[in-house]
Image: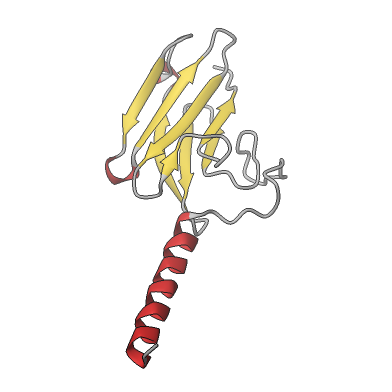
Length: 134
């Protein structure tokens, strides 16, 4: 194998590793509950969706692969879906957030699509079940 071929292969391998690392969240452990200091709802390590039930809104944030947080959506209580319904907010390059509710007053927020590869699954941290009392 020639020197140029080795350089090209090494460069391709490095780029593949950077891509893989930038699209997979680092989890501190097995996704078990963690102790938070900011009053988020039902926090778990590896979460990519974070929810706060504030007095006058529900605030939903996303977490990128480098653990940077950013707001995805905010809903006033009057904007929340009724039992059995859902509300979807389109976020452009960040995909969509959908909140659905059940007959017990529980909600499920799912983040799907976009540049961070959100798949809406609980296993990958892209969904959060929660209860807010309004």
